[in-house]
Image (tube, rainbow, N blue to C red; front, side):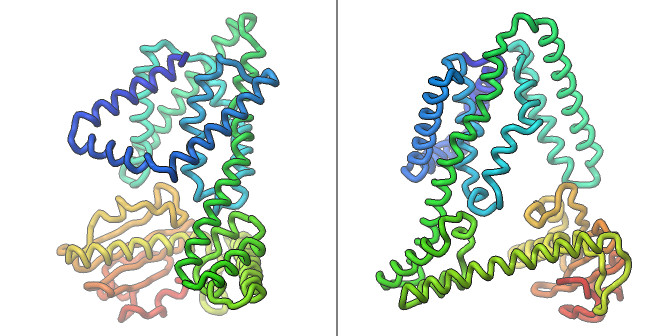
Length: 428
């Protein structure tokens, strides 16, 4: 039987679904979602995951680690964290030590604190009232953290969430202290262990499925690059033998490497391509490690190198990536609408560039929308800017101790013309 907190979640979920169903667009969205998910490529992995969890439950029951009282908790775990494993298959294929970190998260302090806060639930009415409030405050904090103007709102939201957590912690602690002798210690330990052994049980399945998905995508891309069945088979055998079932290497095998391995006329040549790819990956990792070491060793070191480039280059790569992405989006807006968009920096997500919220990217657009520039100050104090003095593909770059005060072509710090790096030596 679901507890009050779980019942509140289900009730609000039904309310949201019912609300969506009252509109034509909402009903269309639900039909589209059902049609997308109701196919074998999604249903089969979910059923296999359910079978995996079912087998783990039977094994846990034989070891006295599970009983029917935990059926609801197990079902909730399957629907949220369990299915999240399938949603995050791309991360499992590309992120280093993904499975190790997943296992560590299952036993770290935050997981134990989450168990503790859920150890005692409030009344049904209190849970029904508290859930939408917490969701609203959380979303408010996320949205408000995107701009400096609303950063105070984000801090207030974070404070309210922290205060709620402390009050819940105090309430649970008080309840446990008053009812310590009435608690079923054995049952509590089983509840604590439940998410841990569930994660352990699904990791082998998720690893195997991720590996299968990675090879399936790779084989499909090989097929696109060669119509000869013998050559395709040689290429597929080579990547299986050469990549040795390593998920990240399989998912990273792309681009020119795919073309090369698909065009080879012998298994030996195909294996040579895979070997060269693995060597190239090692070199890339070494180069990235060396770059990270340079960033660490030169942090807070003032001055420039023999090319006039800053020694302390922290956040340079992330800032440049964010500004280039902003420029690409501005080019797209100008090509579509004939003008640059004034609030673009406020709506873009720069997390893929490595910047967290608030991202610190500032932007100005000339009245009329025919010139713009965006800039950001890095943690070192050094500033980068990118912009345009006219229609696309016009693009200007700048870096210096202070940001430009005017648009490209007007403020002399930009230089005299676009596409010249004399005034931007720190851009990579």
